[in-house]
Length: 524
Image (cartoon, rainbow, N blue to C red):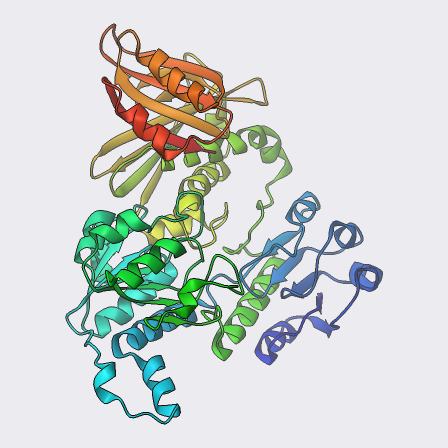
C-alpha cells in the first residue's frame, strides 16, 4: 500500500500511516503536479489546503480512498470520487472534546467576567466590585442538540454540579436519562435555563431559531453560548436583548460573517468573543490526523468504516436492483423527519413486493440518513446512520412482505414516538419516477418535490380554495396537489407541491383557516 500526504499532518498521524504502508509527504503541490504523481498511490490524506478536483481524480487510477483530517470535505469533489468508487472519509470525532471544553470555558468566563476583569487589571485598574460573578453550581444549563458535542458538554456540566435540560427530537428519553439529561421541549428549556448553549448544525430550520420571540420567554439574566455555527442565533435580536438587559451576557465563537465586520455585538461589554477556536487545540489536531489515518488504513485493508461521507460501495448485482430506490428511501426519511411529533422511540421499515426479495440494508441506511441528517450536528451518511441511531437509543427494525397488492414494490417507514405513530410509504413508477403514496394511513399520489405542504384538515367545501388563494397572493405557484380522505366530511390530508418555500407568516395564516388542523412545510 502506498499513501500520499499532501498537506501538513501531525507526526502522530503520519506515524499511524507508516505502521501499515509506504508514505510520501509532499506538500504545496499544484493541481498539475498532483496529477502527475497521483496515479502511483492507493490512498491520499489531505487537510483543507489540497483541492482534490475532478481532474486529479480522473488520473488517480489506483486510488481507493481519500482521507480528510478534519470535518469539512468541500475541498474534495465527492461526485467524481463516488463515480470512481473512491471512498472519501473525514474525522468527525477528533474535535469533540475540544469543542465541548471550549463551550465550558466560555460559560465559566461569562459567569465570572474573566475577560473584562483581565483587561481592567492590565489597564492598571483594581475594580474588584465591578466584576461580581455567579456560581454555576445548582444552575440550570439548557443544551440544544444532544449529539457528540452536546453529550460531552452535558457530562462536564453535570460534573460541575449543574442541572442539565436538553432538547433533541432525535434522542430517546432512555438515552437522555442515561446521560443525566432531562429532555424538554424548547419553550420549557428557554423558560427554565440559566445558561443556554446550542450544538446543532446550521440548516434552513435552525437558522435564526433563537430570535426575539425566544428571548422574550427566557429567564431575565440568562446567559447565551454559541460555539456551534453562526446564524443559529439571530445576531441583531441578540444585540437588542443584551442592550435591554434581558440577556445578561453572551459568549460567541462563531458568527454569520467570519471574520465579523462592523458587528455591533463586538462593541458590548457583556459579550465574550473568540475567533472560531472550538477545534483549535493541539490534541484535536492530533486526533483528527490519527482518526483520518486509521480510516484510510481500514479502507485499504477492506474493512468497513463508519466515517465515510460518500455512498458506500455495493456489490454490482445488488446495486443494479436497489439503486433506483435509494433516492426514494432517503427522501422518505427526510419527509418523516419533518412531520413527526414528540421524542422518537423506534423506527420500523417494511419492504413489500419485489424489493423484499433483495438485500434491503442499504435502503434502510438511506432512510436513516435522510431521517437523521436534517437536525444533526454530527456528519450523517449511509454508513454511520445505523450507528448514530443506536447511539441515540432509537430501535430500528426491518420486515419484509413478499406480496404487495397495489404496487410492484413499496417502502413503508413507521416512526413511533411518545406522541403516537407516524407513517409514510413510497414507491417507484417505472425506475425513475418516485411517489409518496400513503401518509399516516391516507392514500395520496404525491411527487416528493423540493418544497411541499402537508395540511391536515376537515373535509368540507372551501378549505382547499382558501389555502390556494393565500399562496396565490404570495405568488407561490402550486405545481401539484393531492387530497386523501377516509370519508366525506371527515378528516382529510392535502399534499401540495409548491415552487418555492412558504414564508412563516403565510403558514400562520393557513393555520388560522377554520377547519385546518395542522400544517407542515416539507423541504426535500
